[in-house]
Image 1 (cartoon, rainbow, N blue to C red):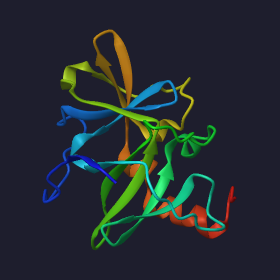
Image 2: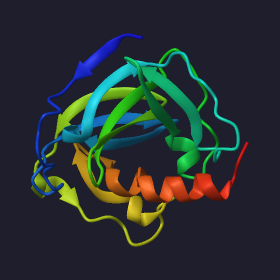
Image 3: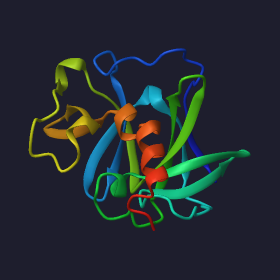
Image 4: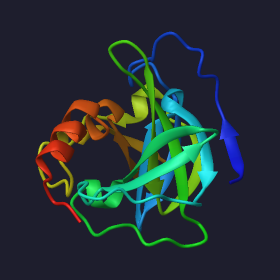
Length: 175
């Protein structure tokens, strides 16, 4: 697996979106989304995946990240859409989440990674109240890049370890 980007993971705290200006943009099918760059640990080419039985459809399985078992979340399926098709541009974005006692790494499967972009706070609009095709609590805001909007995702809601664990325990939407 090739490593494409690496960020400093020794940061003690994460900046709220209003204080962040750099975002990693990526595609899910034809839609552009972004995560705050401070949550990104690294980006990998899509590679060897081990499926885990009786998991929700959006948990594609686990990957081996330098000896650590990392769950792989398919964002397309997490958003209630069809599972992401694997192509040569498919990537895994490794996100670092703060747990109660330790940090947790989660892999996120995306159609393609675009760029790291700067979006000034005055170019970020609040999340829409309606009309979004994904849960509104997943959306942190709407960033303006030129004349186009990018959906800025709330990592802590999209990848809520408690919610994902509860869904896995219930066996909801399992394969």
